[in-house]
Image (cartoon, rainbow, N blue to C red; front, side):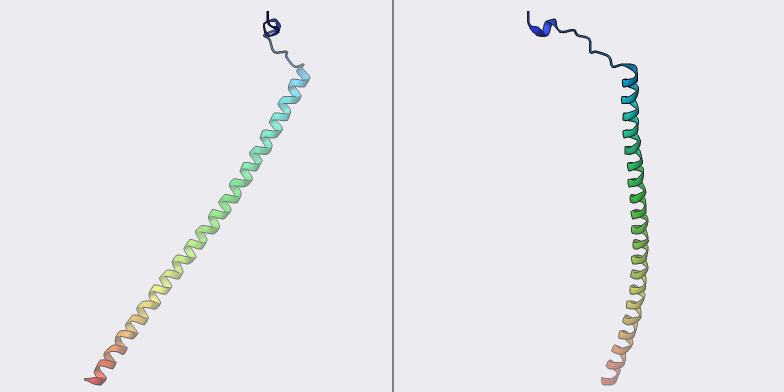
Length: 88
C-alpha cells in the first residue's frame, strides 16, 4: 500500500479558541476592506460631483460664447451692409 492510503481522510479540527481567533481575524480584515470600499466610493462621489460642476460650468461658457458669436455676426452683417452701401 502507498503512504497516501494510510493517511487519515479527516482534516484535524482546530481548537475552539483558535477557531474564534481566526474568525475574529477574518472579520477584522473584511471590516477594513469594507471601510476601504466605502472611502473609495466617497472619493468617487466627490470626483463625480466635481466633474458635474465642471460640465455645468462648460455648458454655461458655451452658451455665453454662442451669444457672443451671435452679437458679432449681427455686427458683421451690419458692417457688411454699410460697406456695400458705401460703394453703391
